[in-house]
Length: 149
Image 1 (cartoon, one colour):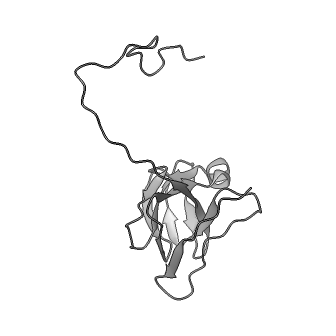
Image 2: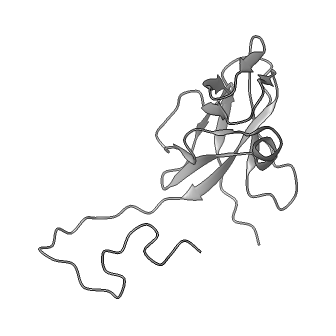
């Protein structure tokens, strides 16, 4: 069962490849970079690369920009902020912040798939200030409170 919504998209420059689903059941659309020239990303460094697209999401939705597992597994290249959020009222060009955790330079070429984008519904909340919160078994147990294995 598919839950399709309409997302408007525009090219910010000519020659831009639009995002697309690579398989019929893929959750995310691959995002392509639009570069004037190749970018060298040395180990430990980060770079923001443009996709050449802008979108208009319906109110009540966000686009999440996530890493591509193949780039992470093969080269150690991932996204610095993940998931990156594109709000429904943002109309600027989408850029992706890549970081190289691998041991070698990573060359980013024009038209390369560097991330994936997932469109998801957003829930908004109304905060209710309380003097105390109800107790739970966990309580204030934080990171690793149940053990690491």
